[in-house]
Image (cartoon, rainbow over all chains, first blue to last red):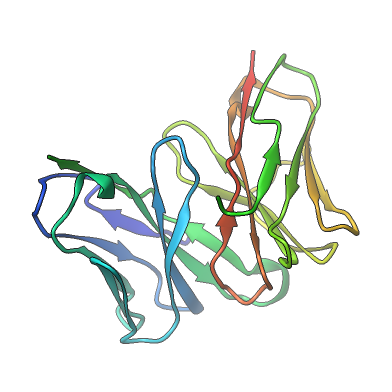
Length: 115
Length: 113
């Protein structure tokens, strides 16, 4: 069974705090690692797609790193704002070939930023 | 707005019934994916179509089927519905099948009573 694990499950921080979450995934058959942001009552929205070991991506105050050899990715949010409150999902794109390629999602980290 | 549309937004039906969920992908996207999100579970991949052909299958029950039409819209058919099928069903689309980012629709909330 291939699992994508995210920690922590939930996080409550104060406005202005910086925070980070972890995504662990199998290191074999790796093709890509996705991060999505999912606000309540909306649909998941892509933040990053990372494919190379050592990749670092940045979008505003949010950045992510990737280590495919040890099977983990970190998502960082600098100076959290209330509008950052959401569930952050990571997903591992499994490459077997043909009909078995698929995106396996973790259960997410729920971030609540208090003003 | 991701550009992916799903109808209906909400659906309430009884056990044993059959329903069809519809998805239109973003303009230019050839791949369509269906996901199920049940209470206390993460997004579960059901099935993927690319340019009309089935490309990948996940944990899709035999009572469920899908297809992608020549205009690239897709339908997910759920039959012999059970209470446990109550969930949020998302459709997503992407340009190709090479593991790139997926654009999610607003979802269809199915309630089976």
